[in-house]
Image (cartoon, rainbow, N blue to C red; front, side, top):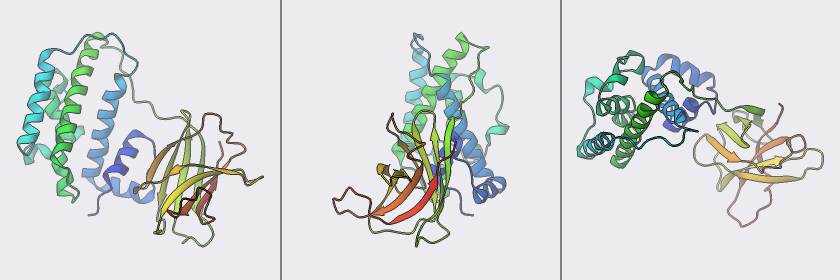
Length: 269
């Protein structure tokens, strides 16, 4: 079974992109991908709970000792046994939060098991396993402190507020299977999800176009994955610059639009 790309699962877990029909079908039948999305959502939630808090006491020394122990374990070899790798978040023991910090961190890392990625053909390097272990242990330690101070004030993971959106369709001679969607978040960022773009000799660039004057400016470039999050100028007028355009560009030191548009769509909101 072909699993969803890890970077794509991250965007889905953060709520910065909606699953298309194929992805929804896959998630409905693949327990591994569903478990990974749930794991990423949990860790994102832990990080969110710490935002806006100030003047917290320093974490106890045993928290850092737990982090060091987890890092050493990651560097020494496989983090977990095969039995624990298959434990999905919905079946996790609800008393985990009352266990020792080291055990909590280990349980969290279990649900982010990097060796599972290896079994799917896109293994993580050892430094990535170490980084995930330390980050999860630190997040659990900090949130554990917060839960003592504020036990009755859980903070849900906020979803980004969308102020404008546009479906992107193939433009010109672009194959009709190419598609995408664009969403502008309230914090001034443009999220793009694209699929089936034709291969180009150069790179893909994102533009906002005024359809009345045909004036335009570049927002940024797409990387190698299907998703991109690009900052918009703080004073951009989306009512005027309402067309999102993805073009094929060459490495020719020419900053103007190439004239080769692949996708286009008009923002509404």
